[in-house]
Length: 479
Image (tube, rainbow, N blue to C red):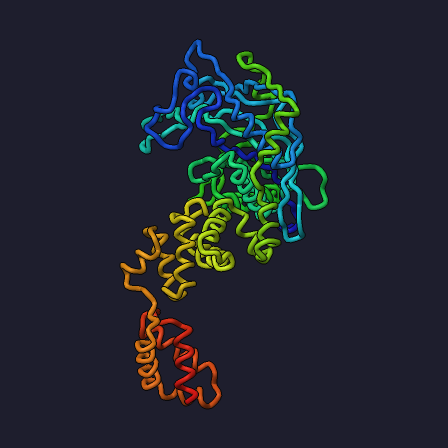
């Protein structure tokens, strides 16, 4: 049998660090970075006699995420102790939620090749993050950094509704986009603010029973997640085809070798020995409190997309790409407000900026220049100060050394030549040096004009005004 005879079944547990100023149970700062063990206190270090106090903003942010993902919001909830030992979790248990999560039964809608598909969410709950172990590369031991211990997380658990790596990527991108828009997480995957545990199993097409699943932990790159899913699905199919059985286990994905490696047997819920945390009060929420959060929710991607299509007149494809990332959408809106030419801004983002992001392997939140700088670049083109070809060079400079585009243009000597006398001089020189092309044009070959204009642009290093060049070439050729 071949891979086509099998179906992949996947569910995800996505952890998003919340953008609160302080940790979930103490007043330590949550910002990324800092010297090891400088963002911690007796509470997040689990010193004897310390007591946790729940940060109300964490509850508010989790409810925001639940409303934005169509969840039912619990009126009564609580915190539980999840008992397992990690060296970077000082208490030897994690404060999480078990049977009474804040949010349940939601969904996220994604686009697939077959159309729209709803990915069901089992739950969204709050919990604390663990610290981080820094391993000595020579195997002499490990040091623990507790700056991240107690940073608030929401865990978003999906039903096993995903069937392809492409669907998983689409789901993660949509989830990331929603969390960015409602401003509960910065979702910076390179900093670990958004990471996913991917559960993968395979079964024969037509089967109703799920296969045994494996879990790949703490993945924070779309590219790696897609590669890991495809590898793990193929590995499981090979095992089954050769008469073996899949072990339920936790795996580590190695991006260099492109393989998964076993870490430990996968735990089940009973292994964690959950019980209500006796140091924390129950969480009770009124309808008014939840409604107030709902009313103040920022504009979501679907609403913004509709506005771009109906009010600005952008094609659906453009609106989809622009609103997929809050950072791109804000860049578009900010630049459009400055240059008053949204279609031109959209074109720059859709083509050259996306190309640069792909080539540099950057995410939209890593764009180094501001919306104002992009808007000013479009103004320079619209005013005729620079040509489109020069603008492309300016954009590369904005990625390398972001500053006001006019300063870049002046320092590089890239201001467009719009002086009639100077342009006429170039036109006459190009005509004199390309007699055959002149003859071709007069013989009805219109493409010759494009060649002559190209030669003139080459002569002026892309600085000549293209409209004036075309006009003067036509005047001279039609004499």
